[in-house]
Length: 368
Image 1: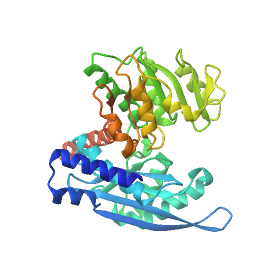
Image 2: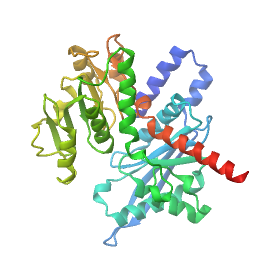
Image 3: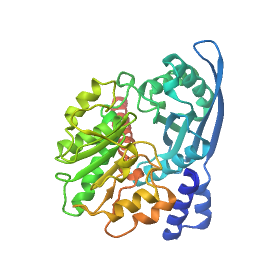
Image 4: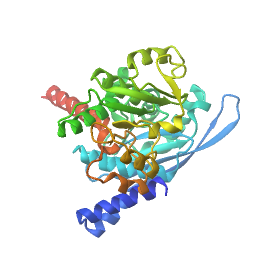
């Protein structure tokens, strides 16, 4: 079952529990608009190459649509559709006046030069510029994209609509970006986990954590957990996985990563482990910070069988789509806790909304 089918099935299950009107249920399963564009660019050697880009605008009932743009080889319309739908639920759970959208291009950004990425981003923006905007749909960075990508979108969009810094979020600070956005998702998942622990009279300190993915989100989550006294016993990134049952010194690991090409490999304060074993490594809290769909039935059932000090096991997913449909029933037992990704990673969109409110207030004062 692919991402869209699983997301739709989970929504239908929730709709039945809520007694949702059948007409409303059907309308929420169909996106407001689906955009598919061809992006042909010259590579640095002069050859032409074409990529397919998508922007799925799921729902705007609560306000302008909001969602990231990802560059990844596995981007397809079903995945983007599912993520757009989940952005609608995320903004609703956060109770902020946005709808949901998502975009992506099926490419591997690691195989493209900076100039090729810029050309691709600008062509994509040219194809969708009349369908995005501050009152319509506001993109943001996602997997494979960053502040520089948003700067290119902003610049290209402004050629058609005049200088419009609010058309994207996650842009560089000197172009009006948000301070704290880089840390927001990683810190947000820790805050959410901390709140869940508090419900049971527990705290992060003295509990064990396994973190899959040590990019921007994983590093901030690990650092925050370490500073709160939590014990990170295993982490992974694109170069492999490492473990230390006594706890990894995260500050030392970050220093090693900075001087080691940005990867964890060969860190002296831990031993190497099979990356495939990371998700089934015994721990109190499993924090997936990489690709979605990793919490399959096998992984969930493993953690349901182990005994750990806090809740026997807590899943705190960061990517919005982490749990496969077949695994979902495994997460409903009364002594097992899960923080859905669209709850634990709402911090960035909350930050964006808070900043926009502040700016609107300042602008109103200036007009008086």
